[in-house]
Every structure is written in C-alpha cells, then in structure tokens.
Amino acid sequence: MTATDTSPRPPLSWPARACDALDDRGPLAWGLATLATFVVIWPLGLALLAWALWTRRLLPRTWPATRSRPATGNAAFAAHRAEALDRLAAEQAAFEEFQRSRRATEDRAEFDRFLAERAARPDAPQP
Image (cartoon, rainbow, N blue to C red; front, side):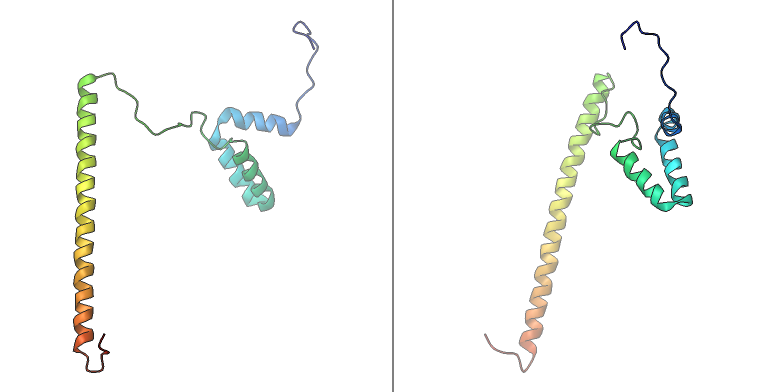
C-alpha cells in the first residue's frame, strides 16, 4: 500500500478487537479479563496471564524507571528535604551500629553463661 492508497483495511478478527478494547481501557481491564478467564477456564486464564505479562499489558503505561521523587522547583524545600534525608540516613546508620553492638554484647553474655554452666558440671571435660 502507498500513502495515497485508500483501499479499505480488512476487518479485524474478534480477538484483535477484544485486545484493542482492553488496551484502550488499560491494565485494570486486562487484570479483570484474566481473572474472569481463570474463573471460567483456568488453563486459558493461565495462558492469558502469561501472555499479558510477556507483552507488558498488565503494567501501567507510565511505569516509572526509578523511584526517585521529582524536583518541586522550590529551592528551600529541596534543601530542607536533602538535609532531612541526610539526617535520617545518619540516624539509621547510628541505630544499625547500636543494634550490632547490642547483639554482640548479648551474644558474648550468652557464651559466657554457657562456659560458666559447662565449667560447673562435674562431668565436664577439661580442655
């Protein structure tokens, strides 16, 4: 066909029309169609689910590549947000260090208790 060719296109088959209709309605429609197919004929529903996932029809059209927050355009807020995130990261690192220290202390106390109980037994082997 050329750009000026005005011959009519052949009509779409019913699966192609159904696919176009679901594409127009978005991922929720695909999910509901997949669920309905699972209820009626589960092997066909499984096949539809695999195909919809393979062709990415169940994903939102504007699927974010990253989960970063967009800039607001307000320099004061951006500075405040950066400062707050840095403070939270420092607090998280300090808390994780505290947890490591606490676990090490508890583990050492438990091990010392085990050695004391072992030494208190009369049949304890001497190293």
